[in-house]
Image 1 (spheres, rainbow, N blue to C red):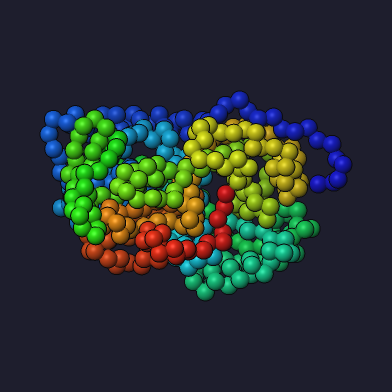
Image 2 (image 1 turned 180 degrees about the horizontal axis):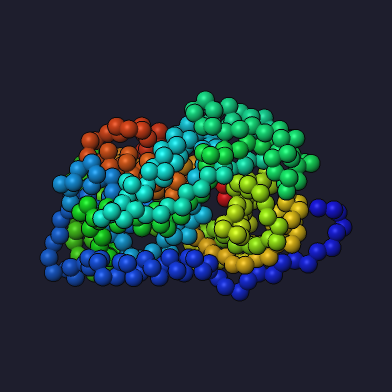
Length: 438
């Protein structure tokens, strides 16, 4: 962007949610209204083998895999918002990548990508195959000179673990993406054919529907506490969940898959969980110029954008990143610096127009920004699947399989996820992932 050029800042649209999000939530509410079990209003005890707290993408994946591994299990998903109006599963940008700096995250997404490709057949119910909408133009990570060595090292690790990521020097970037300003760049990495985005709400609903078709039950209710057994032992156990309506739900195993609301549930079991609800605003904008073969672009300054139909979506880490901010988009985040950055990287974005925006929560693990999985040493029949810090949608298929294997077999059998054990909190063992977006 030429210094001193004069521009008129694009005006934000008045709507606070995307039209697609409103439609998805309305469809969800209609689909669930007639078929959700209600609590028993405290009139009798209920018992299941596995009680999963939270029926978002993680809970739905765990339930689906459990029923696949052992159809005889009695599995219940307990969800207070069965219309999923606030669920991160409905508000995600729903993207998947292999460009991580830690091998376990690469492996999680490799499995996730294969699952997405097979999802229409795997999740079909009564011959009806879901449309997941997977497209794979890749992620494009860009680097200034000071970030080149790090990007090269990450690329080498990704290739070592089978991720087909291309390394593109500046001239190759300019030739491949004529719409991209590359003068201040030295390098980029691109995962075309191995990364992209998909219809996250469709995946969630398909997985939940398929789990229920195999026998998992969805219970509308709010878990407010736990009834403990073996309180005098070194490791306590959960005997039952306590629901807000007075229902007591006895269980052999409980799973905390409550996403951004996982922390207070853990506290009710005496566990301090460093998972915080952090709002992220996603902006929808249009541009009169077509960007040929546009991938999801990660700019060195920290913002991202990608195509969404004929428009684009994008976002950045907010300056105000406090806990539990209202779940409404903060249009002020699309400020002069953000807009200037977009227009600098893509000159055609000088003419962009903000069309809409929505907001969702990251379940941000402030300990090390990686998933917290498995049993906590303080309560050995309470398992966790939380703390994904923006990676939950793409990691859900592999995590669901892993948690189900722990429950059914007592150990991971496919992909060893033990490095992500929630026990590392007590051990002070951090898993470092350099590529956290937002």
